[in-house]
Amino acid sequence: MMHARIPAPVRPGRGKQRTRASIEQLLSWAFQREFASLDFDELASVSGATPPGVGMEYIMIERAKLGCRVDGGGRSEPHPDADAVASALAALPQGHGGRRVALWIAELARSGLTPDWHQDDRPRCVPVAWRSCKHGAFAQTEVAGSVEVMGRKGLRRVDLVVCSVTYVNTGREIAAARRDYLAWWGALLELRDTFRVYGGLTAFEVTEQMPPAAPWRMSDVRQS
Image (tube, rainbow, N blue to C red):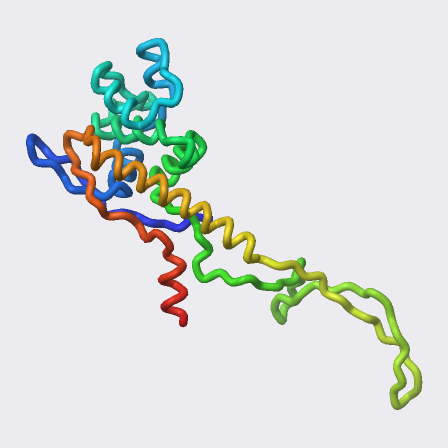
């Protein structure tokens, strides 16, 4: 499950006027509006070789030299800044997840989603199966044995009924989801700082704005 998060739409500036945009807005614009796509062998396909261990900064500099563009998948060419965003994301360092996280971020941006950090979820014990009738839904049970009990009419045999249960939204699952969110946030921070330090955009100026680093902390404060 993912969370829908639609950043305010942005448009590229014209001439010397650049549009201020957050890194999240920039990613959304590049992959939703401009249909940019990732090319992990961008430099190799043009220059014939890619030096080992290159980073986002190197990719951006060489892009400018070579004039290479990201494959737009048969559509009209993306805006040059969308190409730059895709190039920087394709060169995401391994310390931030490399290609796996780059593909994930691109898909999230394309879909207007953010990682699900299990907002409002709490560990719960629930039945494994349910049965429905005209009176509603009830936990499915099964007979596990029987015992004899003494009633007013003497001994009678009573079935022992059990309900199989499972745990959902366990602490481990919630922690894993939040680690994924932090990985996404850390990768966006890396991209933001790359564009703020090295530039590379002609129509946008990347702001310091970031999505919440740990939104569950704010949620916990509201519930306390």
